[in-house]
Image 1: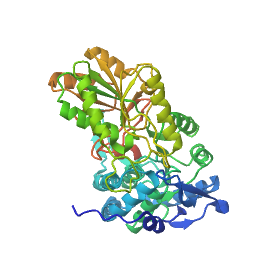
Image 2: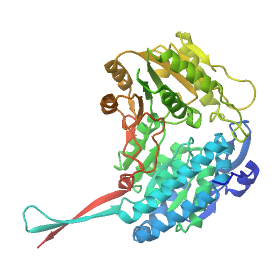
Image 3: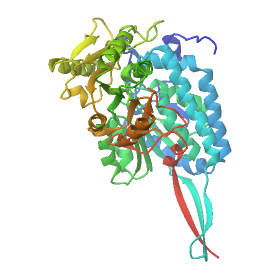
Image 4: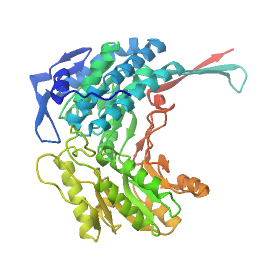
Length: 490
């Protein structure tokens, strides 16, 4: 791979449109309103982008409706080729897209570049799935009738994406929608709208027809989104975000019976048994905890380590965490960028303070640095009380809370004692235990001796209050397709 050559933040900001993208054109928001996009590393305003009003959301929906019939009739191969061209464009511009993500979200450039490649892969994956949408033909049990089964796009979709993976969460939703023949209204997070606007430009350049994708940036999500869901014209909502917001959106979907897929919060257990390879466990912990500064729904939240190896594991993890360099993501050598905003950092500060007040020991980190930006140091806590607040909420920051256990049944029950069920991590060299614990954990995904589960070829999603449906994998496109059955007497 050639050495990355990252442009400056000023260069990438100048190249990105700041308006709404509706019906294939860039336009201002109704009333000309704008909203600031902040740099979490400095607290300074990077730029202003259009701040959509409810009328803009309706305009975007009308464009999606107008384009739906023609887009659904577009040949699968044509849809596939658009996604393939978009994949290639993202890969060609990975350095610039990485610099853009680092500017608006804060993650280090190397990690942002990794996200660009990950994001592109969703387009490549679904370009291949677009031409494999299958139906069926069969004789019904009575022998006198035939069943013709076809798959059809669900129709106009509303896609709501989070700020933590601003490019990849867009492609993970847009890719299957395009492949299935659905038109879209995309509402990105207000903290990170620039990656979505850049993505809209890439898709237009790849040949996506006007109106198929419409991007509405807004600071007034509730005012813009609710009328779209209750109006009866959006046929599907795909949302990634908090469980609390997901519950609200589900209620708003109910009147019009909008089909939903939701990737919500997580509270991932990371279980290290006494026979685990500690080198692999520590490496896995670094990946599962520190990816994206811990701001990931898949982040390891609760570390359960067998008492016989807990002290060594915690000590080794603390040394690794303490060696990470914290600073602006654009600075060479930085491992850990800022958290997304002051509210996010304050939440982490309060969770750590609560744990310490209940008897936790800080092995490394644990104090907020002075100066500008939303930085928080990598932190390892031991002796954490099960009653600590961080045990029952997503930390969304670089804090590893270590508890001990002695019994398999005990740790599985504790791991499952949460409303969430997105992912769990298990480290053991016992094959029987590997399968047994993986089956018993109430989660949608398990990282077995690995700290990374995300892959475009795998179905991503959770159980319980971590969501509905799956994204990615061979089943990812199913969320955007309906079955239609035709009865044929013979």
